Image 1 (cartoon, rainbow, N blue to C red):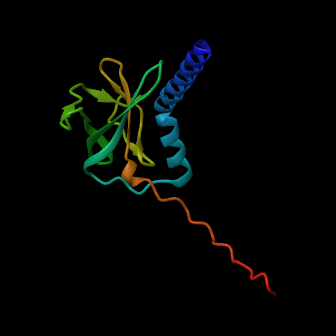
Image 2 (image 1 turned 30 degrees about the vertical axis):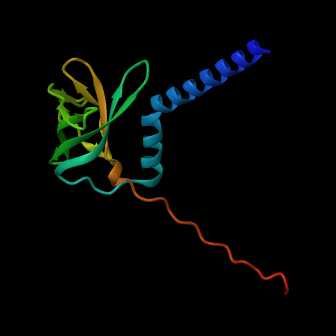
Length: 144
């Protein structure tokens, strides 16, 4: 009986951890879906303090909190938030696939490639447009 409970507990823990890891690896896909369906407000030139930095890799994506500086509609600097709430500058030269400054399109940056070949995207989560509201259905009285 103990073996059955141990086996069941192990199976549940494994499934929960796989679900958690799948959600983390899917963060960019989920964000892109929301931005594609709802759109975004214009990302103005400024330092944006609440962005999501997505590090892309063949084994899965990782999403981090961060901030970034936008000038002339392009990303010029990226800061990734550390566990102690301080920021680390991504101190590497980076470009888009065309070897120019990565632009922001519909609230998400173009693919950013560092000189080391690391790949990132910056998501301006505060610029995501709200969900459209649905009509409220009328309640018809039963005593008609």
